[in-house]
Length: 307
Image (cartoon, rainbow, N blue to C red):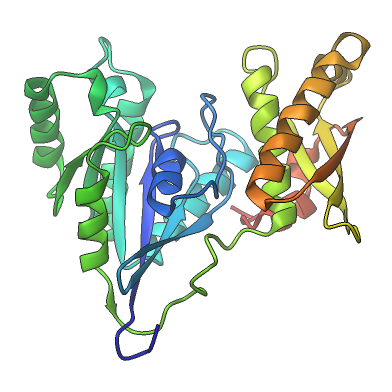
């Protein structure tokens, strides 16, 4: 792509926890660049996914959910989300339509109100993306969209199902139109700015959440300690799963190691699919009380320890 024809833009994707930001980014990019679970606050760091539409390259910044923070890690995650919005050329606010429609409305509705107030303080414009619209009738969706647009002057409103793909083409066209003449930020074959080591750790954390959604709290972290590219084209990956308390370790390991084996098998398959190579994955569970207050963890995932 030559400089004469290329166009680019950076678009922040913000919203309440579990609104579907990561699912939407993966859908627009056309590849898995950020993890997705049904557990809120899964995303902890900003991940930049690369969408290409014709001559336009759109860098989609997937951000942590914005909510009322209670812990240091919470504050750092919310700070990372707002920083992503400040640095972007455009902002998409993702809202879970089904959550907003619930009686009473879910926590996402309160978080969305908080996001709207934050945008007003920043003086930022934004477009609205109502997600999970397949769960509601069109009349109700129009009512919800009207309510949100009355609360904030969104420049555009999109109704999509990030999971099923409906409404995505119109959003892609709009995003491409936001691109300004200039060089692309990433090579044509690069789908994200996340390293293989980090994405592998995130995929393992995803599998832990998917299997231990009810049993395990958020006090868990996965780090890739070693990465060995082998002559046969495969890769050996050694990871450590950090838990906060002694009682959490046997939950992750399971009876006779069954849970950890299942997590490892699923993560290995997913990582291999993303890397397009054979993966040998080795997991170790360690207890490290207070890991969520260690600067090194924040530096590793690129969020502000002092937030």
